Image (cartoon, rainbow, N blue to C red; front, side, top):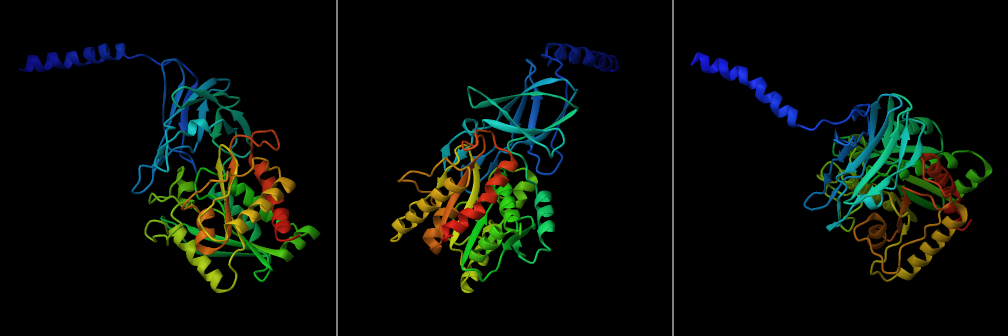
Length: 406
């Protein structure tokens, strides 16, 4: 018996070595690690293929009581030998959206890269069959951040709030908490007694950082203190919920909150506090504002996608034509005062359950969803970065003034 055990022990390394020798080995690429340990990083699985391509598989997040799933947030750090030339290939891009199969691969035309996580540049991607995307990188140093869009993190918002909090024109009110207990703020810029009120919400979907850059540019423009800023704030007061899905932003999610709720859906009925405390808090704030006679006159929901249109919904309500006329005026002013050129959705468009649709139908507030093209700014003929969206946000200050009759 002892002789058999000894023989078996001797055979183990022989068998292992034989098995290992049959495994294909990946070529040397210079890659050392893909780091996802930092704020807002996207969870990924990665491996190096036998052809040297680095396969990066995104992780899906899922919607409660639905087949919907989403993967599209990209934010990680590549660590590799300086001078290395790497090819990354992205997988798990087959989303399910509103119950229908879809793929983010059709919209993922560009990414942003940075060596320090602060100064970013845009880089085009390459489409492959079977919903795959490739990206070529050249390592000028040992580390390189890769992101779907220039990131805007909770720490970036905290810095903005600390910057503006002392300003007498600003009021920051905590209206509730997220699923994980993070504070939700409404930022008011201007006098609550102004003749008109605008509400803007950003970051209902965590990957869509463009909206945060827009509201940052808008806030800073209104607080500039020049004659135009004073004129704007004499006409309207601005309310902003700057980061609706803080948990998703913190954890690098794509679309849903941590309870599996899409914060831009099911606005046709009261939000359940258990699963959507973020929307429940906003509803309570809106009810209180309405009770004070300060209901918003205009609401704008900011998102990112691959098309960049103003989503004007068409619910079956008696005053639809008046609403459409106001939205046509708003679109015209966007074209006149910003770099917006993409236009609005067609005459049969509906987006049931979205804030833009239901704040009009349910609460009588003129509202729309503005998608910011994640790949290309047609009006500037360039791939977008945070500074471009800040510029757009600053120009929105004038658009709102003109909308109310300036």
